[in-house]
Amino acid sequence: MQRSAGLYGSLIVEVTDGEKEPFHYDGEFNLLLSDWWHKSSHEQEVDLSSNPMRWIGEPQTLLINGRGQFNCSLAALFSNSSSSQCNLRGSEQCAPNILHVLPNKTYRLRIASSTALASLNLAIGNHKMTLVEADGNYLEPYSVSNMDIYSGETYSVLFTTDQEGSKNYWISVSVRGREPNTPQALIILNYIPTSASNLPNLPPPVAPLWNDYNYSRSFSSKILALKGSPKPPKKHDRRIILLNTQNLIDGYTKWAINNLSLVLPATPYLGSIRYGLNNAFDHKRPPENFGPDYDVSKPASNQNSTYGSGVYMLNFNTTIDVILQNANALQANVSEIHPWHLHGHDFWVLGYGEGRFNEKNETQFNLKNPPLRNTAVIFPYGWTALRFVADNPGAWAFHCHIEPHLHMGMGVVFAEGVQHVKKIPNEALACGLTAKMLMNNVHK
Image (cartoon, rainbow, N blue to C red; front, side, top):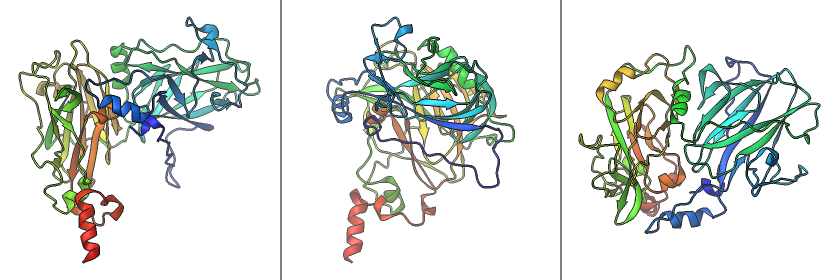
């Protein structure tokens, strides 16, 4: 739950010297999006771990580059709510960022979402955006008036300052995928030499309806790799289907994958696998599918689950398909969005579908130009197909990027080629059984 406490930041990776990116721009800005609660992350942890579980609720504020407002709005003039107008001089810590731009130039916005819960939609008033990069991989340029961004995702978009230069414009961030009880976050796009204190005279952009999943699916399905990008292997060596469910364990509310709720062991996986410490985690092979009679559209007939700490051991340099399968939560007619994030790899997003995945759905896979990503979303009651090559020695987390969901067990661990890992730093071994091993070696 550390991200809920504000432990996050952006790292910008520049292109290698001598290489050029496949697009041009005159300047760039970084936008780091997050959500904020007044209740501390420790209190949130206690609530989530209680019986009965006390849900954390919706965030009080959305933040852009760590700044936001509460109990007032920058655009109260255009709002139907009872919010008062924020009276800010600009020097306050909560004052919005202002992006200063020159007319008739092209700018790059690097956008990252580090939200703990919220799925978001971003728009620039009266300006089109062209998506050109996602998760560090180039895209076929895709022009939009607004864009969805899920926790853990990053994008680069280009926009041109081709609007009336005597005005300023809103950049808005809104909640998607959950009923939005959190106000929009707003910052100002300021056309120089217009004064930045002149608020835009048009209302902020309005996001699509929070539960318009057809819109979201359409947006995600149009994100494609730039021509010349690496293509996926045509066939997989192994397919793992991961059913996402909300469950009960001894009355405690948890999230589970194939009916196992992840509990991380005291000993780091990398060291315990590398040094053959058999008691460090559950060595029973985790399930790779779920029962043929399971109906993903209804609450499970048996909603109980168990804890697990097992690892999916992948053969090195093999091609792995992962099918993320969404399902009904504990309550009837409830299925949530889950953005899944893989450490140590990029994967190809081969496609999305509704209902339960079956082998016939393979005909829908995009093997021509699927995007390379490290985060992908599954929509309510749907599936998402991913493919990656297990070519990075190590033990890697694959998990829902929503903080409370991971805290409640929504993740798995992949391991591959661990025998190829040469030297593991002592700092990565200083817990659990590997710590005892280190201590014994010191004293020998």
